[in-house]
View 1 (cartoon, helix red, strand yellow):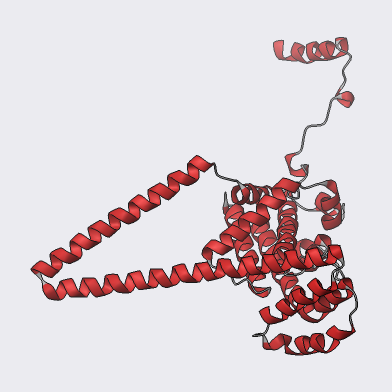
View 2 (view 1 turned 90 degrees about the vertical axis):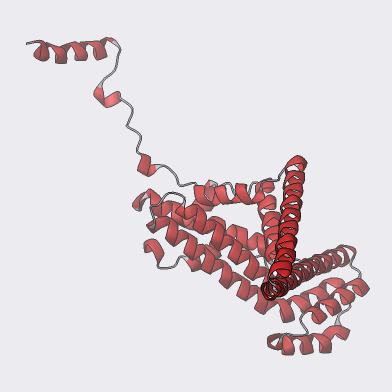
Length: 333
């Protein structure tokens, strides 16, 4: 009897409060939440986060201490072997010398990679200054330097030749830089866009189909690091490990500072077409948005690595890149 009376009591309470089942708010549906691209936003924050000066000095001193301790222990081990077993001692000495030689070559390679990235950055700054001041002499100097940067690329041989033949016909800085963009950078821009599309497709696919925790973050970080390194190589950077990480931090820091990693309604509408997210699961929506953010990182990497600023040629559109990258994926047309 008590169970039968419980229903009317609840109805009376709702009636007294002025509520009815029709007026009750709907239950939130977690699957209908707007995807935010959490994996890519996490990657951007991790890669773009600046360490404090105290933290940097801590790791520098710790690294120096570890290197010093390893050197002392290695020296003691080699000298002890030389005294006790000369053959083993000399073997250890030769191997240690070979290891030090390889480490020296790696260090020289990293220095050369940083120098190449600095050269491209200097070239871009010079071209920007020439364009702003409409300085034809500075523009010709920048274009000549750009031609020397790509002098070892057979694929750009005809472009360099056409550029050299038409340089004398240019009478203002904008036309000079536009000619260099069309003859030398057009094929490189196409290759960079292809790398961005590949990375966006990989990140979107893994996010959508792999439900493992942190797997999407790991894939996004790996794909973005590889994409940025490849873009730098396409434009002549060929950055090493330190150079690639430095470049990645520069790109991510720029994106975080400008708020470009924050997903807005404009990005969702342009990428997902508005109605797509209502037809697919949240996981697929996250994949699409993560792919779009990867494309946004790739476009920023193009701007950082490109030896000339975008002027005559249009800056690639993120929505167009994602549309090509995800064509046929997740049911897109």
